[in-house]
Image (tube, rainbow, N blue to C red; front, side, top):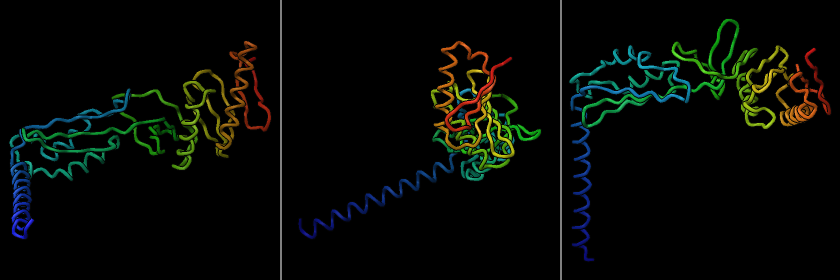
Length: 245
């Protein structure tokens, strides 16, 4: 290829790139100036946790100008709208964008609760990372109950215990409740049977779960499991337990 052909090829590519950039900028400018004729609100909620409804967010949308009838897109402060939507205590994420048809799409991701927690007179939800958020006025969810927790580190530790219990064969359905006393000792309440497990510290989970599993098998064989009141798995090499009188 001669130097002249190379110049022509480079010049052609430069024109293509400039044309593409101009078309992109023109398209963006045209989209910004197109009128918004309405909006849709979509809330993505975890299964059986419809805590958030449109009415909870309507004030935020109205402050931003909703329903945006014949308003140009550039007149809507979308970053601020997204930020204000994320401030709602039940909102995990928010994204706002418009289409060529002039419809503004507001997409919300709701937080997911993994447990309920009672702290004094207050009750709240706890997420997978130990964060808390308030109960919903519209719906409730059947979740493990946490009590005796004072800070985020304790919540994280308790959530880890709940997660491991839910995955262990000894505890079908996991634990329905978990209490921590002021010395850091836990008492667990299995979901599948009404008895308490004096668990102690959060350490040695596999060892304690194995002892509980072995006792269940022994009591099932003796057909006496229904009489179990509590067991204590804190002691090395043994399980202490008591039957209902």
